[in-house]
Length: 159
Image (cartoon, rainbow, N blue to C red; front, side, top):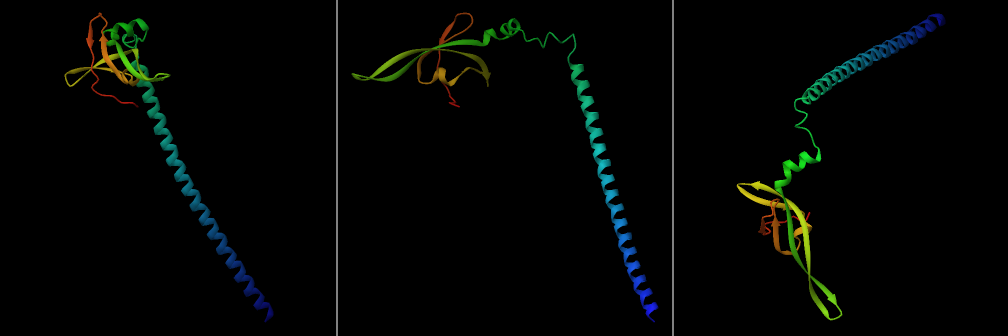
């Protein structure tokens, strides 16, 4: 009887080991398939991105040709010729208070700056840096042809 009892145990242990091995093999196969699927999706994504990159490079290279290269020219003379009539000189007087031995005194400082003309809603404006206008009075705007006009601050942005 002892011999039969030992065979039963051995069969039970071998059966359990076979079930564990089969389960581990099946799970490994499942993980391999999932990994393969993810890798395939990534390869497709990389392929799509490479294709789009090639397309964009072709579009970019076809946009710059000998016929329109002069339009893209940014030499100083061309820039000056296209913009000089919209550039202005701004003169102003800035009143500052200075503390002296005799008490606070007002001091006048001449301010000089530049700006450019823009058009918004049918009106023309001069845009310049905030420090050019900060506290200035008696603003004079001089255009490229020497014509000068009295300027008025209509808005500021200290930032």
